[in-house]
Image 1: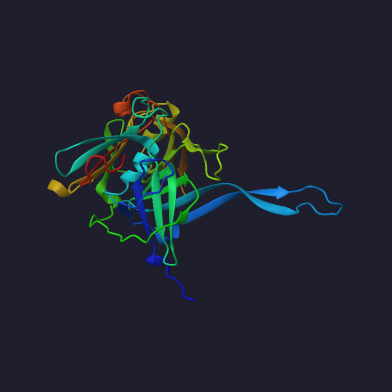
Image 2: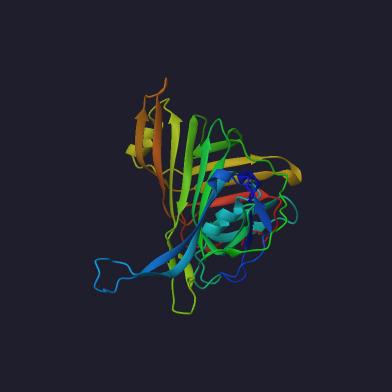
Length: 328
């Protein structure tokens, strides 16, 4: 009996034509082994019909099914777009050749999709012992994490149909390198800020497996609710600037931008919260120097809405060598 090494695993992804119908991977995500958390969920149904004995359950039968899958790691500028597009939904790409610029915003248009839902994806998980495909995956959670002395990182979560065994694919990974946080820049209220130390931006949508009566355990649909954007940034507290933004409800525009490289190899990841409300602020003297951390809540606005019009609390710009149609 073979013992399998965790780091031999790999994770593939592909957008689906029909939600819930598995497709072979077209790209592969370099993720941390410790972040991979695939879970098949079977809702339990118990026979509790009394039979004259002092017991509760007599039989167990499987109920409805679904799956969840958590993963994450360092940000690679060519593959992070799947999670961003998967939770936001609207992708507009320009460029005749690399680098292509993808503007990723919240899907609000009933023209693009009757239910204004993002595309679904199939995740293919090779874990050495076997391979499983997770179809119908909808991204519901994405968190971008940054610390001045580390890598730009993210966490993501999907919910989809129950997994099934799949054919072993042949993975191919790009040569794009992960992104160091020091290559980024932060502007608040139009002013470049050099004293930010760490933080995160989180996007979350309620996700509901919707079940019908149709001779299958799998969902009729996996449905995403409205988007909420929150965040946290820690600054060296040089003065009262960030505290004042909170106390006076300034709601400044917040732009996080990582852009580097040249020519066809140029890459960029930019997050814009045009109305970044400071909803909490607290100073901290636990280190040798004073710090202040602010909690952020992105407010809906028309500037960040993108091509789908309506309102959105955030907009992303991603530049890489991936052509139009890659992510959505």
